[in-house]
Amino acid sequence: EPEVTQTPSHQVTQMGQEVILRCVPISNHLYFYWYRQILGQKVEFLVSFYNNEISEKSEIFDDQFSVERPDGSNFTLKIRSTKLEDSAMYFCASRRTGTGELFFGEGSRLTVL
Amino acid sequence: GQQVMQIPQYQHVQEGEDFTTYCNSSTTLSNIQWYKQRPGGHPVFLIQLVKSGEVKKQKRLTFQFGEAKKNSSLHITATQTTDVGTYFCAGRNNAGNMLTFGGGTRLMVKP
Image 1 (tube, each protein chain N blue to C red):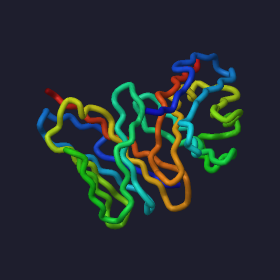
Image 2: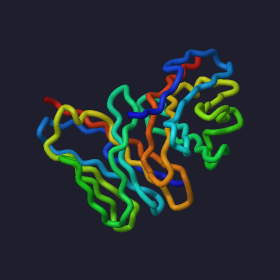
Image 3: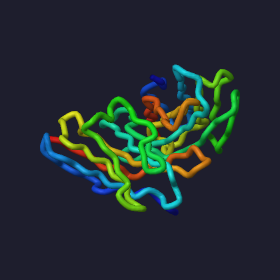
Image 4: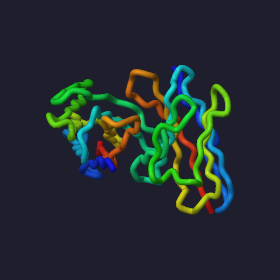
């Protein structure tokens, strides 16, 4: 069964460093998302992406965040200068046109020291 | 902005007991989805409800969408230890693409 894959599974970084989280959405999906979940808390929307541009973003997704689809398969989330409060599990998700179901990846755990 | 709230936050039940989680949105939704997240896992889609007053069943799970399309519930009959996890509702409003998750209800089942 096709699945969303994310790398790395865990990244530890120093405060102020740049981080890139990578996702490979399911191949025939056209809508892509990033969510984050601070340990034990709710799943928070960051950004949605369609047709090579951001379609919606939340207040969390400030100037320190950016997304890119550099080629036909990858979808990346970049955090320019990480802060302690960016420590969380970051989930990538994708969905097909015409359906609502989101398929989530296993997540990338980011720890900022 | 749109807010989605869930209660209770936690629920301990004895295996075999029933369980219900409730979800309320601050705005009218175009649809509502339910996801299950096992401990250490990622959210997995369970179901989507679209119509006002809709009720759907999946084996021991019953999902309901309110008449005003602002609330929903998930009821599990005769819980099993495999039901352990956090159940999230997630609502999409009429405006766009964004799916807003509720805070989740963490279900613990004692064997």
